[in-house]
Amino acid sequence: MFENNKLTQLLNIKYPIVQGGMAGISEANLVSAVSNAGGLGVIGSGFAAPSWLEEEIKKTRELTDKPFGVNLLMTNPNVPALAKVVIKQKVPVVFTGGGNPLPLFPYLKRAGIKVIPVVPLSRLAKKMEDNGADAVVVEGLESGGHIGNVTTMVLVPQAKEMLEKIPLIAAGGIYNKETAKATFDLGADGIQMGTRFLASKECQIHENYKKAILEATQEDIVVVARFTGHPVRVIKNKLAEEILKMEEKNAFPEEIKADRFAGSKIATGNIEEAPLLCGLCAAGISEIKSCKEIIEEILSFD
Image (cartoon, rainbow, N blue to C red):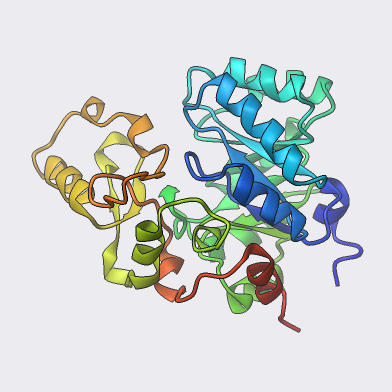
């Protein structure tokens, strides 16, 4: 079905499915499972130390011989050091998010690394293409974590019209074969999913977090921290309620640090004190499956 797909050819993968680089979540086990299933797994470096990223890259290579990527969060002051690790380890592809990635382009491109920025606007997608990006992810507001203001349904066709040559990857609200087909029909060359892979057998988040995703309704999924200029979509819990109350009191944006939302590992199982990053599509997810089963289901449309 995807023999002539621009994204599969660019990344040397079987299926045009990318796993979102979720900070604190996308580690070797999940990443390798997605890559082994024919997609592209992506390590989420978030605010991690360079030593952690290097170790995670090595672990991933022990678990798969397929291509995988690394996501760099541009708000991390350690990004230059993380980029050096990526270059040293010869990771084939880097995704960027949360800020301007253009200063990194020359270093990554010189090392032969493919660069794919994640952007919330079609105008920015075109800007990335004009500056040498190998592909671009346009992420609609339906997604989990940090969000923009435009829906996936609007972003994809408008970005497709503006782009001239590079593959377009759509993200936000994609979780089953119907939403995947609709996205491809709108012009996407590939899709990126985060929330759907949270509810996978290989994802190492706590079972309580997975249970919260399966039980979440549309009303349970809220956006917090709008006043910081970096709104975040999460499942409502004690932490989310506290931040919503801070918003009502006109708190200073500095009172909420960005790294507070850069991971949801939850080792203890207490899901009330951690950010449960999650997209709107969680309300439609009712079963935990393996990454292989998820990908096969997603691509089962005619």
